[in-house]
Length: 75
Image (tube, rainbow, N blue to C red):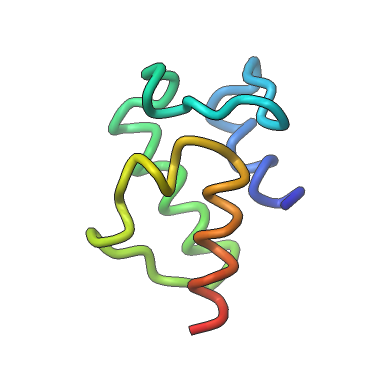
């Protein structure tokens, strides 16, 4: 989880990722942010995030992103 939060902080360091659950819904992340985050996640965790994974539910919180990463690492 710590690695995920570090990636997110590199994009928006002002956000409290421990409690924020509306990263997409509240428009904290825009499309460029998502592209940056996805690229970093794929590099750091050696996973492939495809278009089917690009849903608001998977990117609304650090916990959701972490769970996505964990699921993809298990595949």
